[in-house]
Image (cartoon, rainbow, N blue to C red; front, side):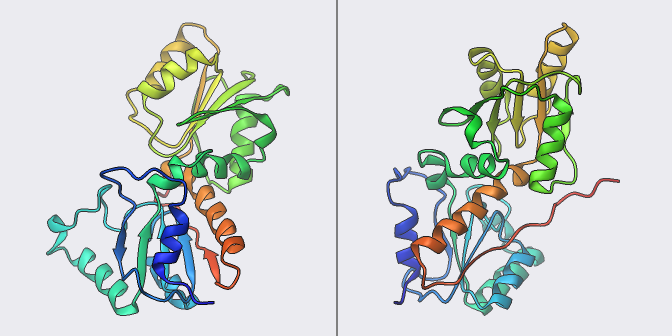
Length: 265
């Protein structure tokens, strides 16, 4: 059976309420293009595009925009050589790129958060699934050090950043993926859900980290782990590939991981 890009897009949007200003758009290619193979990735980097070509695929489903802006505007990049080279590579290879951001976050449960919790093996610990967070309860006496070690081992992340006493016991935690680590989300959640630990992708460094630092300074048992934006959302895109393999058995669907963007010196 042959599938078009439109078929895949329609499948990804089933059950999702479309925002007026959604970023879930076809950034390159045509909706009527016949799909030869699918790659899912967090970010359609130069490496991911080259790997897509090598695999013989012609549709990339990415969580983030290929062109360095959340809303994908490219007018300001028109004369930039990096943008021009990347755009040319995509067009010359005949690759379609569909961004799957809003719909996967709006699904119930949030597909990106669920992917991370699944990768960590923590689905049995989920107590509550909220719009922007999963709240987890741990009967075991896991310390902050134990939590960080488990996250690194389960995801292959090279390093994490943490605030708090490494030996403190973390019985209640919340996971917030991507750019949900800001204080307006984490601080009320920490109080309302009586959390010991926030595990987040990223956020403004002068908000949640400073709040937790002050809480620790006041003698409270609070902690924070920042994984990194990509690191927290990559497992969700890996899970999406697994689900697409089931839905489109005739297609070759592959997940292509992103290498860490930062090096630690």
